Image: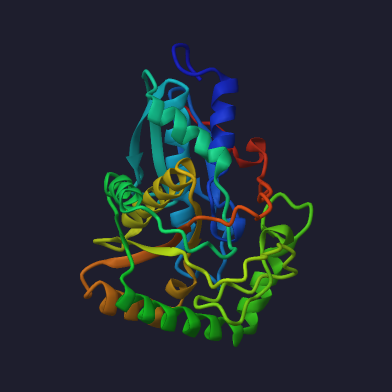
Length: 326
């Protein structure tokens, strides 16, 4: 970058951390352009999942998570980010333009950056140890600061969510195109994208919330008790591309905060990928006033669980687009 701004090695390291963001099926649907005094985020339409995510909502959420990871990583290296979202009306896939300002990092920013390397998507059962209300309040606060609503799912709402999740799982199981797409992107060994077999447990028919049926699951889940995860609902007041991008940023903040305080976590979007179920959740759980964008399982992982392996990521060089005059 230009003199007075981060050197190329710092920028590359930050982009690598931004690439650790979670994405639907680990497709990593982002591309970056590094200009003289700014960094630009683009949606990579070639990574689309036309059956799972026909309206690209999950892709935008994923890119929002990468954008937040970028800001967190830069803050820890001494650079505050000024984010201009959807800066180009003629190019809706140009999701953000980020400029940098010299900044003294806080302890919190350093901790959040460290959490990028600690965070894993944990699809295993969580224990019955309660999550302190203060922790849940902190997750809500961090999301709100980024323009999204996050709150725990109540007991009554949980029953409705279970119905929606099971209905979505049945609809997907009956769709051969969905099953093929999921098989293509899961059960991976040695790939730089997709869901590794080592990261998914075998289906558990008795679970309250059935997980996606990924190909070739190999992750051991020795817990005998039912899953005791707290369920958080993430929603926005609108449902346009800007709202979905902000929802992804908020999701990232929740997941990194959870990792920082020792909680396991896993984002859940399958019931929202079926339009009928998403509309039922919106009307029954949000009174039709907001739009559900994701659910997040949080809780305490059993101490006997094996540590989760880091999921693969594509190298930064593969994600860069040619720079233009800035």
